[in-house]
Image (cartoon, rainbow, N blue to C red; front, side, top):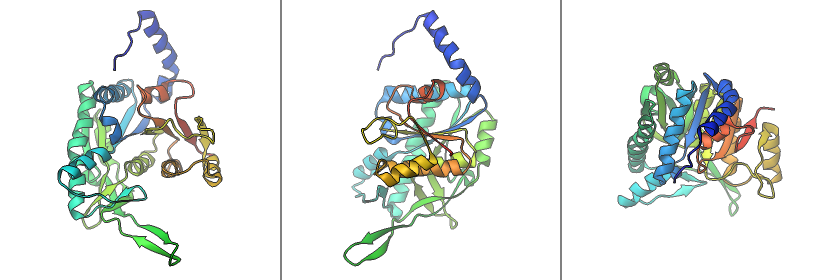
Length: 298
């Protein structure tokens, strides 16, 4: 993807327009969830790395949490291991969790860190097990069986959720001028490894850091109304009302619930935005109104 060149006058105008927003976020912590679906387009991935590097260079403290579902699927296919999903969550047995950790904390994590480092900032790839960053517990889900009228507990194996976040390793990295790039793999009380949804991990980390913004990069423009138009801003109460009314449905529900949990944990604002757009993070932070759906406290 080629980018147009700007005249000196246009560049100066863009910088002047962005200045108030640069001031607003100077010194702020911004947690960015970067999905594995975005890695396929190499030019866009490199652009993401440059944008995160730019945030650091203008005085913002970005923290990146990444997924890697497509990359895990590809490795499981190569190894002839079948995947099963329940409510969007991958059932993860002992053999599969080893593959998940290898892909997320290995290949994908170092790839994302490399994108940012090559762009001129220093990024360090870690996972939630490093420094006790993500203390995890087994995630439990129940499902109603209409035939028996019984709610059954589903065993998802080594799928976890954050029980606690120890941000000391993040502070150590950011304090040294580095950008943490975090794979959502956590450790249980007995040392077991848990696969954690990247949105959930990003929300918990953002709350523990009292981040100014949580940016969830997705493959949709944001929260849409009943006529499929983007809703630029919602309060927590409005989100809950939209779920009740059936405006927010399907896979968007866990995303907005992640945003609400982050806000209740101390995050100033959470945004769901389209990570497929060029310079999505910069457009959200440095333009009037942004490009996604901002969810804020009541």
